Length: 122
Length: 397
Image 1 (cartoon, rainbow over the protein chains, first blue to last red):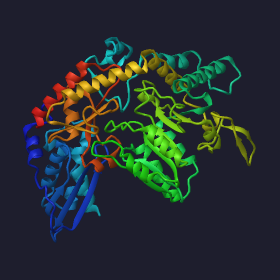
Image 2 (image 1 turned 45 degrees about the horizontal axis):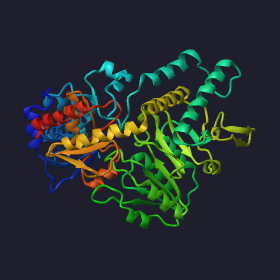
Image 3 (image 1 turned 30 degrees about the vertical axis):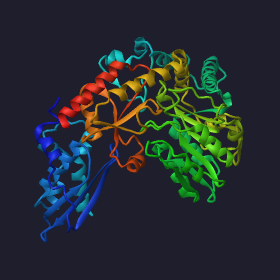
Image 4 (image 1 turned 180 degrees about the vertical axis):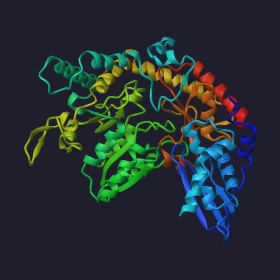
């Protein structure tokens, strides 16, 4: 039962990574999850070579969305838009040990990654 | 308190004996009698209504008409004032499409409204230029009637308001709202979705103009609901959908409308749903709405008494009147996580914004966890909920 809320996930929930609003950014995106009303804002500063040099996020939500945003932003650092395109919600779910999460909660985990992809696509 | 045997009427609990179902504000479970009434139609007299001259069609028409009569009697309305719809959302959209509103008018809503009683009016405002106004809430989550008196004026065409907030349980003072609206010449629309299965409604006592509700929140099937309209108003109102069975006469270029209620029931209706809804009314009347009200209010009081100190009650404070809904937030825990962990203990509650996202923003909260009651709930369900909250706290707190 408590596998979903395992220690590593709870640690990311209590101490999220990269949860900051960047002072300087050249891409920004807000994404909503209509199911629960969560909103995630993503800020990206790209390097001249097109890699993600710095990334931050803001937003309040459930433990899964907070952990998902932490892992997604970590995974995207120093990656190009092309490399990030290949990341999927499954990547984040696997990294969080949540491969069997039900579909409605998968949206919570994938919200930040969707915002990052949309930020880089615009 | 209702007898524990009420649970036996509901087959869901045979399939899930350990289920604590506390999401009745979203949808209620279906009793055997409703399922049997619908199954009887499908298996023994299925035919279209109002149009066949053969025995089965007449039998189907009789059953469909009888369902309408039962619902009319339940509301103290006349049968021609009772329109079958797919649900409350449809009823509200019908009114927003059909009532005559101009740019000079304003429409008054409350801060409590479900999206279904907000977005149709936003769209109407976009089409016509009419102004939308909102009755504010006070710090106790109750409608601030001083602001109602400010907002409702002679230019108010409609006041559309929920009877009970689906999100936080607030009960609207409908008597005051209706009186205020009438004194300004405005019509009143009441969304009774969260009242219909919990308290008696008499459309004549309070002089309702319009009332909408959904069958699936009153032990009936999904996809069926009711729009009640005062006869004179229904007669003045243009239909919203056009097609079969809603016409009196038609030629290639023009058509005229059938008598009430058929004018508003274009196309083949949800016949089994209507028959099921009639059976749901029979079920509610067999248990008795006063007994249901007392049962649910007693569960409500018990829940609020038992709520742990780390749970904040949202909406009306403890002891204040509320519908059969307890909305709460656990300190430091997102409501989604609360619901997820409760689910692991077989406890079904709703979490999130409850289709009232602007209200959550207005209250400055991310959403709530919500327990809502029905006839089959027992004090033991509340005990399981409270124990479940302890587990949420242990895991996430």
